[in-house]
Image (cartoon, rainbow, N blue to C red):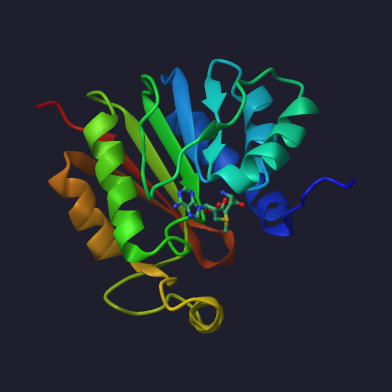
Length: 197
Ligand SMILES: C[S@@+](CC[C@H](N)C(=O)[O-])C[C@H]1O[C@@H](n2cnc3c(N)ncnc32)[C@H](O)[C@@H]1O
């Protein structure tokens, strides 16, 4: 049986790694939310050997993620069940990474994810969120506008989120925006740092 494969992951993994090498340079335990196929973890973990990379997702994706981890050069813990519908936060993580999840989860779940990250990261913990975002209520490209139409055709709960709305939610839970990185194909990598209480 062939491994699940995402071409988007193949295209974006190198540019994302460049950001992670910098922002997670002092981190130790990274929790990835919505690991999908597991391809990102498979690529990132051996290239960030100072980190323990913990994958997670909803139940139906865990077996496939494990198959990618099984052929990874770097040993990684087995994927965790972490569903934002009923999130039970795992042990202590000082960093969180999530790619292409905010436009797939409903806004309620996206908000819940940001709130959980903010509530559980320690002081100076980092949160990196990759994906497309709108600014001032506007798409950043025609292709993102078309992507939004496709998302809505699949489910009305899906949609490209407003950067300002996500960031306001992050600020409410003590996450301070450190970086907003322009990425290929009209995506961004947003990076927050948890402030002290
Ligand atoms: C477009 S895929 C992105 C996968 C991967 N991160 C990537 O960049 O290729 C969206 C991911 O969000 C996950 N997801 C959707 N609803 C979720 C939920 N309620 N809790 C956790 N993850 C969820 C899906 O299972 C899927 O892995």
